[in-house]
Amino acid sequence: MNLRDKISEYPNFPKKGILFRDFTPILKDPSSLSYIADEFSKFFHPKDIDLFAGIESRGFLLAGILAARYNKGMIMIRKAGKLPGKTIKLSYKIEYGKGTIEIQKDV
Image (cartoon, one colour):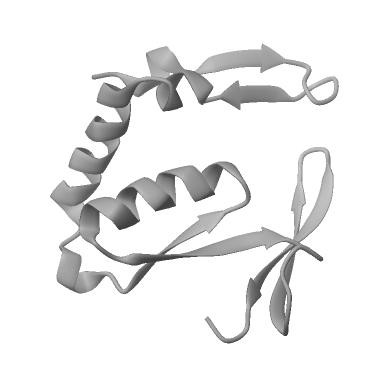
């Protein structure tokens, strides 16, 4: 299965010069989701995984699927200000700006 064929591309979104790749078509297709989990399992053994981490917000979906497949937990890495309690932050730059992500300190 070629997942790249299922990804939609939107030039100049969210601003001029950026090519946005939308994987919503993959999420709509159960066979694609199963394929992702099957392929992941070829490279990682369950004993080597403690938790899955999903990065806001699309990553939540894939991490949740993999966590369920492996019978593991999942944690969320979110945009700054979205998590309660003490957090650990990381700032980053992308083509069209900068951002900060956080994870709860106790997870």
